[in-house]
Amino acid sequence: MDKKKIDELIAILKKNDLSEVTVEENGVKMTVRQGDITIVEGGGALPHVGGHAPVAKTALSGEAAELAELETKYTALVSPMVGTFYQAPAPGADVFVAEGDSFEAGQTLCVVEAMKLMNDIVADEAGRVVKIVAADGSSVQFGQTLLFFEPLV
Amino acid sequence: MKPNYWPEIDRYESLGSTQDRARQLAQQRAPEGTVVTATVQTDGRGRLDRAWVSPAGGLWFSLLLRPNISPAEAPGLNLLAAVAVTEALRSVTELEAGIKWPNDILVDGRKLAGILMEMKTGRDGIKYILVGVGVNANIDPAVMPDDLRLPPATVLGETGRQTDLSELLEMILAAFKEDYYGWPNCRAGVLNRWRDLSVTLGRRVTIDSAGNTVSGLARDINSDGSLTIVDAAGAAHTVHAGDLTLQFD
Image 1 (cartoon, rainbow over the protein chains, first blue to last red):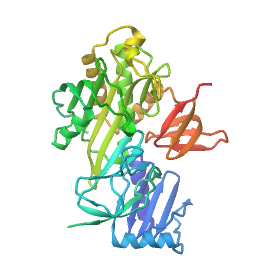
Image 2: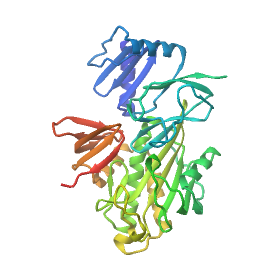
Image 3: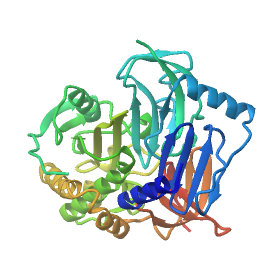
Image 4: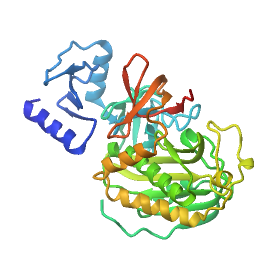
C-alpha cells in the first residue's frame, strides 16, 4: 500500500468527519483512525502503530494463521460501524446463527449496537456460518470481521 | 438528504408494539416518513427486549427512515432524535426535560421518555431505520411500575395537566424532519443543542459497556456521538454503547 492510498484514506476520514476508516486490499488491512494508523498483513492480530504509515510484518501465530486461511477460503462479514457485537437479540435468548448453521438471504445474522442504535446485520445471500470470530458482547471496530460464511447457491 | 413528502400517520388503537408494525410496513416497502402510532401497546419493548410499559395516555410511535448515509453515520441520528423529542417536550409541557446519554429523556433524574433505534443493513448499506419513541404523557404516575431500571416520571404527574398528544407528535416530527434533512451537515449544531440539553456532561457516571465498567467524569460527546469519560486516574475512555448510570454525590 503506498502513501497515495494512505493520503486518500485520510482525506475520506476528514471529509466525512469519521473516527476511523478501514480498507482491505490483497490481504493487507489498513485502518486510519483520528491520531494513528494501523496496517496488518495477512489479517492477523492487530499491531498498533502511531505516526506515519509504517508497515508491520509479523510472523503469523497459530490463531492468525487460522484467520488468514479462513480469509482465503470464505467470505467475511464485517462490522459497518463501531459498537458492541451481539449474537442474540437479548441476553439469554437464542442466537441468531451458530457456527455450522445455514441461513437464508434476508435473515439477521447478528447485531452491532452503538448509542442504542441496534444494527441488525442481514444476509445478502443464502449461506452457512463457518466461524464466528467476534466474542458476544465485545466491542468491535468499523470494518472488523465478525464472522466467516460460505455462500450457498 | 432531500425533503420528501411524508405520508399520513398510521394510527392504531392497540398494537403489540408500534416498532413491530412499522417493521412489517418497512418490509412491505413503505416509504420514508411512515409513522405508526398506537393508543396502547400490549407488548412495548425497550433496548435488549426489555418490556416498556405503554398504557393509554402515553405517546407511542415509530418512524420509518431510509437515509442515504453510511451505517457508521447513523448512530448520530439517535442524538438528533433525542434533541427533537426533548425540545418538543420542553416547548409543549414547559418541563425542564434533559438528556441522559445517549437518548434517555429525564426530568429530575426520572425517565419521562425513551427512544429506541433499530437499523437493518446489508452489503449495500442501510435498508431502513426505525425510530421508536415512547413518552409517558397523560399517565397517572400511580399506574407506572416501581421496579423499572430508572424511576419513571409522567407529564401529567409533573405538571397536573393533560397534553395534546397530536400536537406533541407533530412538534417532534417537525423538529426531527428539519434536522434529519440537514444531516450530516447540521451535525455540529445538533451536537451543541444536545450538549445544552444534557444532564450527563460534567457529571460523575458509571457505564457498563461490553462487559467492562468505567466510572468517571462525563467530559464530552464526540462528533460520532460517542461519550468520553475521564476516570479517577485521568485516563480518557471513549464509549459507544452500554448502560449509563448518573452518580448522585
